[in-house]
Image (cartoon, rainbow, N blue to C red; front, top):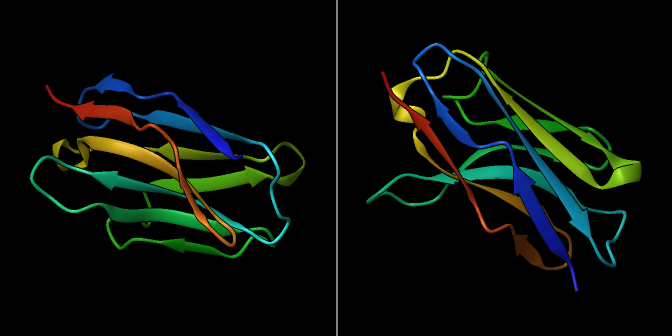
Length: 114
């Protein structure tokens, strides 16, 4: 059984920064992709960024230049540094681990508001 535990969400003013962290535990294949998705009210869940075991990174267009994803393979952790946050970044952010199966964290709220 794989579990993902997220931390680091919260409220911030426009232009501010937040760092999200996710730790995976359980039996995890080395061949995996870890990433972050988000879902705003009334919208579908969308990719924010993902990173493979070997360090290949994909960013959503809105995340490029503002967000940075990183991981530590030995700890099965993935972080998302979010800078220059905008009100439209407000959403629940979910950690994701994809191996043979798809695993999700419980989600952490990010609110960007003045």
